[in-house]
Image (cartoon, rainbow, N blue to C red; front, side, top):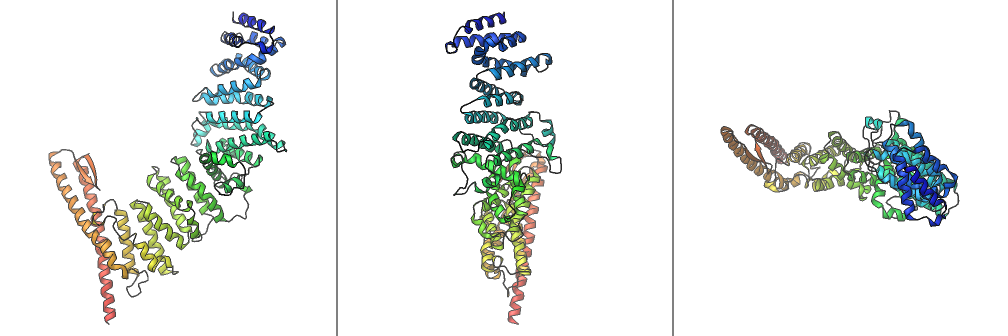
Length: 592
């Protein structure tokens, strides 16, 4: 019945001129063709399509059959005996139908599915889509751009595999699609290369490929994890995809070196500035991804001129590192850590000039490392962030270290980080006293820095438990200074500032310890009384109320706090004892 109905429609249309086909005819043809497919009349349908007398009808209306054919292939993948006929029909329709209508129809089909079907339909339709675009005579660049944009939008919905096992399993088909997408794009890249004349259409095609490369660098390559270089990197599909994308850039006249080093400059030396300004955020992510692929993964690294100095490379990568560290995804900001490590390891200790800190990214990157150290839930990445901050400090010259310490003491707002910085200050003072004189960590410059260290932010009211790491580090630094620097020598300037240190730090600390210990001893007494009644109650620790804690757990927390105060008090007592001994000894020497 369906075949007869379709033949009836075709006979009626055969006597019409092409321009006389009505919208009703298209609709009836599609419904009848759909029924033929549903009822399995594939042989008769193939005969109708291949009949030369139906050539004009198929050219204009046949594209309506592509959707039903594709859906059959997707939903009936196990009926192998019939699939070859449906593939044959798809090939015939691609060959015979109006390419403009086919293009839009294929892209609509690609946009339809979700989940795992995204990759299935892309892998099915990429080759027909490529054939259709190659048949188009006009606006080829626009069609390539539309196709690549649609394909990328769908691929960006797929989860990016993270581990080696996920990459090999490729459950959502992203890796297969990336490989197929490269093959889809290659002929259009070759068109750009072969067309030596700088025609408007060729420039537009180059533009569309450039946009596709930028988008691919952001997704999936920005979040993609790559197999270890010791593994067979040829089997890493995402790495191969990255290598091909970078190859496309060079092939169309945009080598990675020119793009990485000129992105973000006020004066550009590469074209397509309009695109850069319109999509600057996306481009920043793409350039950061490209920098990581080249410098850390080593893709096309052999194209890098050997004459570039390590500090020059670091300077231009710092902006990309900043972009990566600003992201919250571990798979992205971890790349910032490795890109920074790659740059710093090329530089000798104490050789990175302080003038570099006048560049915004050279201060925002260490602040980004602080966020990784304090906020990242993964311990290995927190430790990596700490190691990178220490490595960065090691590379700076003395004035650079001094400037960075001041910056981080003012901005970190984290007791543990401040303790880490104070320990680094102590190390620099020690080197200055023992080895080479350094004006930044002795005398007036050091005193200015110590003003940020040897004080309590809120005086005696400062939360000592919350700031215990910083306070202990400050006391240890002060103890070191008292021991190492004699009052008569006063190399550090400590002894002339002692009265200020006592008023701003030691005395308020005494008062704060007495207040804190009294508070926690009262809380312990209250908790012990509650324990007798076996009730739950809340306690206040570090100005935060902790409700409904079992009494035995409360006591552990409270005793731990008291132990911390006792520890601070013992170091404080030792510092004051050393000050007294030193001043008394100096007085006796002067009298003698």
